[in-house]
Image 1: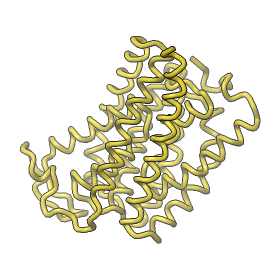
Image 2 (image 1 turned 30 degrees about the horizontal axis):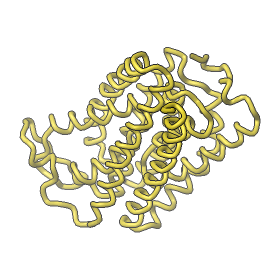
Image 3 (image 1 turned 90 degrees about the vertical axis):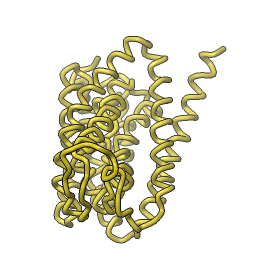
Length: 295
């Protein structure tokens, strides 16, 4: 456990603080461009590159996500890329799910121990990111389906999403989607946008730019809940978060600008490639940790 203002032993070198700022710059670009909050990159890379324990990385990533998401969300609000009704409903489920996921994180860590818990988290990250990359890469058409998945599942009441003109969306299904993704968010410390963005494309039927802006809002408010939960146990460090935020400020602006210039198909393609690169890094670290332990 570490204090909020106490410098972690793994981040004691000034060069490491500069490297954290560089990581924040790259993640900021991804946040503005893909609407993913960036923590799906931050959490595993803090563990792999800086040897930050997963629980501290998870809590710090939650606080970092608040800083990056709020700037990008305001930008997309001004551009009209936020479906407010959808965002509000998903936020309710995501906040509850984040709380449950954080409790599961603590339970698994106590059950497995620090070393094996790291391997478990690596494995979960690989699975979640692989599924996400596949879904986004597979959905290559700009023509949205007339009846997305949540318009076909049972459950009342039903709502209309005015931003898309899609009718007959299941309200319980929308709440359950937020709860499920929020649970994964609370467990892994990811912002949630890496899951919300493809879900909004494939399950709800938003356009790519609406999915980016709306997911950022859900990511923002659920990250506030997650940062409070992890911060209460001292698993948030400003020494990690502030350099990341400093680097991400310029990155977010560049990312939002790029999202306006690139075609939707290119955004989805680059998003999938980015996830694949992160998966490769996690697999490499998993092997390097597992092989010595298996001997």
